[in-house]
Amino acid sequence: MISHGKDIKIFTGNSNRQLAESICRHIGIKLGDNSVTHFSDGEVSVSLYETVRGSDVFIVQSTCDPVNDNLMEQLIMIDACKRASAGRITAVIPYFGYARQDRKAKARDPISAKLVANIIASAGADRVLTMDLHAPQIQGFFDIPVDVLVGSPIFADYYLKLFGENNDDCIVVSPDVGSVARARAFSMRMGQGLAIVDKRRERANQSEVMNIIGSVEGKHVILFDDMVDTAGSLCGAAKALVELGGAKDVYACASHGVLSGPAIERINNSYIKELMFLDTIPEIPEKKSDKIKFISVAPAFAEAIERVYEEVSISTLFK
Image (cartoon, rainbow, N blue to C red; front, side, top):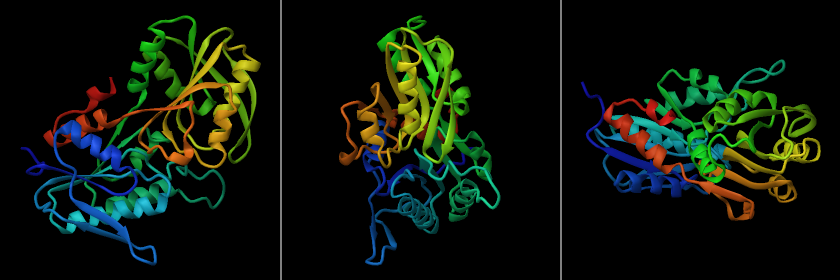
């Protein structure tokens, strides 16, 4: 029995409209007609200008900066669609905010990722579609189905064209021990070796590089991570790879370019030759750099949305 709605409707808030429009072009439909504005006191106001009754509704909204505004926009859009009798509602969250608060690191810490998961489900979402969660266990925080797309195949296609497969002069590097599993899977996809930058974090957003596990001397290095926030860890790792490890040059890639604080200045002054992001978070004019490039995730999300609607497996997107 097919449980999807009568058709696909895609709506978006203010966080990443360009991505939502690109997803619609790949599917071959128009972006839903709605508006998301704010009252004078900052409250979010949502209006839907077309019927969603019985439709399979997908709400595309990254919870990036401003995180709380974008999260509230999504929650209120979900509520609006639910009260308008949508057949099924999928929260499409290319970048899932609050993902770094996934456990109690010290006494009396909140687990904000679980709280946000509860709120999204309570608002009326029937399922979630996202990409590269910072902590994989967040998938289990939801009591509704969660499909997590991965960015590594997209990056692998790019770097295989650039360096070729099984290139001994190229190596994948994890910028810290916590990202080893993710980097190892990427290195296996690339057919290349793996090295690790071991560091000790002194305090939030600051780190001290200790040593490099593996040989990177004379090689093209690909630093692989899931997100870049202030870029301190990434740029510190690049410096260590060149100055301590003797790497030939450093390329870097991450699914989500948060780029807060001094990130752009650090990247511009770093040893990184090129930094590649997915467009899960939109490029902001004030945060541009000649070293930063973007690859669109619209084709991946468009195919995933079509597969969710048709009730077929999306596991092939991970290969």
